[in-house]
Structures are given as C-alpha cells and as structure tokens.
Image 1 (cartoon, rainbow, N blue to C red):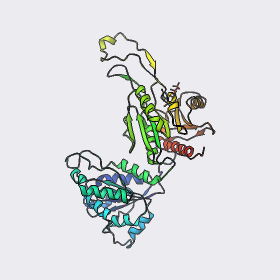
Image 2 (image 1 turned 180 degrees about the vertical axis):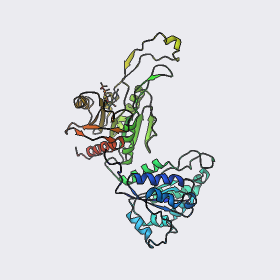
Image 3 (image 1 turned 180 degrees about the horizontal axis):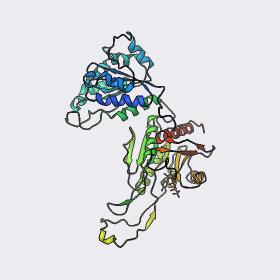
Length: 408
Ligand code: CTP
C-alpha cells in the first residue's frame, strides 16, 4: 500500500499550555509523529503540572522543550520559529491568549510565535465563563483578525470537572490534526471554491422502523469532503445515515432517503464549482411504506413489497450544474469495470469517474481501502494501486485541482 506517512517532510511546533486538556495533546503529538512529521513540543511551566515532558518525548522521540534559555542556545526560539512549517498551541489557556495577543516574549512558546512566519493554529481550552469573557474574546479577535491565526474550537460539551457545558472544551486530537493539515496545505485551486459531496447510503422506509438500504459506510465521500476542506474549499456534504464523525469544517446536510438527497442536491448544485457524487443511492424504494409498524402476525405467511425506481441524483440534476464546474462520479461494478464505467462517464456528463470493482474484497463497501481506476473523457484510464480511502481522496482532489487549473 502507498505511504501512510504523508507528512514526512513536515516540521511542526506543538505548544502546550497549562490546562487539563493537555492530556489530549499527547495524542496530537503522537498522531502527527505517526503521520511522519517531526514534532517539537514546547511546554509552558504550568503545562508540566498536567502533562510531563517525558510523555511527549515518548511519543515524538524528540526532546520536549521547556526553557527559553537552555543549553540548546539562546536562539532556540528563533531556530524553532524559522524551521517550522506550522505552529499549533493546544491547549491554549486564557493566560496564553492574553500573552500572545500582547506579543509578550516571556517564555519559549510566545517567543517562538514572534519568531515565526509559519501558519499558526490556536486551540483554546478553558471554563466556558472564562471563554465568554469580553477580554478573552477581544484577545481571540486580535489573534484572528490582526495576526491571521486560525482559531480552532473550542466546542461545547462536558468540561473537565463536570462544570457547565457551554463552549470551552478543546477540540479532539484528530480535529487538531485536520486543522494543521489545512495550515500545511496552503492555497490550492480549490481555495474559496464551493464543493458539494454526496456520501453514504440512503435508507428507504418499509414501515416506520424498517428500511432497505445498502452497506455503504460513507468513508469515501467523507474522506473527499475532508480533503477538499483541507485544500481550502467550502464543503457541503449531503450525507445519508453514517456512523462516521462529520469531517472538520464542512457543512453537513443529513438526509435519509434518495428523494431527500435529490432535493438537497437540486437546491445546492447551481452554486457549486465542484460536485462529487460518492453516495451509494438505493436505486428503488418500497411503493407504499406502511404508516404503522408491520406486526409479526400480519407477515408470518410472507408478504410482497413492490418497489418504485428512485431518481438518479447525479443524472437528473445535470442541467442544475454551474457552467464550467467540475463533476465527479463513482461507478461500482461487478463485471466489465471499464466498459460500464465509461458508459456512466458519458451518460451522466461527468468530468472524472472513479471506478471500482465491487467483487474485490479490499475495495468497495465498508472497508477502509480502495483500488480504483480514474476515467476522464480526455485521458487514458489511470489505474491506482490499493490505497487507504483517505489517500484515494487526496488523488481525486489532485485531479479536480488539475481540472480547475485547466490542466486536463
Ligand atoms: N447515482 C446517483 N443516484 C442514483 C444512482 C447513482 O446519484 N440513484 C450516482 C452515484 O453516486 C455514482 C454514479 O451515479 O456517482 C453511478 O452510480 P452506480 O450505483 O454505480 O450506478 P447506477 O447509475 O445506479 O447504475 P447501475 O446500478 O445500473 O450500475
């Protein structure tokens, strides 16, 4: 399988300040290291009460840094600031926000901030009353609008000691990683573009508690939505029921049935620069779903359900596509992969079509990997090796970016 260390040439400074959420930063440091990044963790004095330097050294394999003046040399902050590709402070306390907003230079993380030109991501964590305080909000506003930092979170949810649950809780480690991914990606042809992605299965009711559907997990569409957001797009994810966590930063439009998906797409499509149809739409629905739960005694002798065809969401909405936009479809086939896929490419006026073989166990529904061939009207089919769906998503987004840049 292709490299799973996509950040292997990246350097990241992870600042950790004194909040109980510092325990989450150990996971952040680990995840970034697993992705291949070189992570320099800088802890404030108070952070060390919550998470010891040794924990970070254990997961990064690099010394954790605590002192502005150290044997490493007085210019450590300058070196860190200049060498890093992105800087993240997670958790960021109210005290840190105040010092950063003032441009203070009284510890290693604040001086490194002054010495860097790399993108900065700040993940606040504090009690919700403190977060709502006018001074904290003013500091955040300054960091965002004057210094151009990304402020990620906080979210709502239970705080450490079970206090009130307004905004204050630090975002989860995987969400911090996504924000850093976006910071590292910089600008791309997708920056500022609007993209719609359909994903997941649809469920077609038989009665109020039962449905027919399919085994789609939504993984492929969710990975595309996340990758598009990371490259700077405004993403609208129209999703059927899925157990997946909604991707960071996207507008999630949850639907249940094919008809609901059709309505949502029909409504949003005219504004979209890119549309990706990754949903496994259930092609038919029970004719007359029961209003009442079907009882066992009514069905014991067997019963018949008649079906009606569902609309072809991608095909029926072709005329709603914005002129010049890029449309991407998928084709899941059990035989004649390329021939059937080529027909769908033309019939549904796609610019790109991602074909995969449903009989391949490592590919298709409900598995984390995929082996796909990408078709376009202008080029020979491009066969990709077995890859994680997250990596396939990156390639699809690359091909979309090429088309947006007129590089067919
Ligand atoms: N699609 C859709 N609405 C449907 C069926 C499919 O939007 N009702 C989209 C899928 O999201 C995919 C493409 O059309 O991008 C092809 O889907 P696929 O299920 O492979 O093909 P179908 O058109 O349903 O044809 P068949 O089931 O006969 O292979």
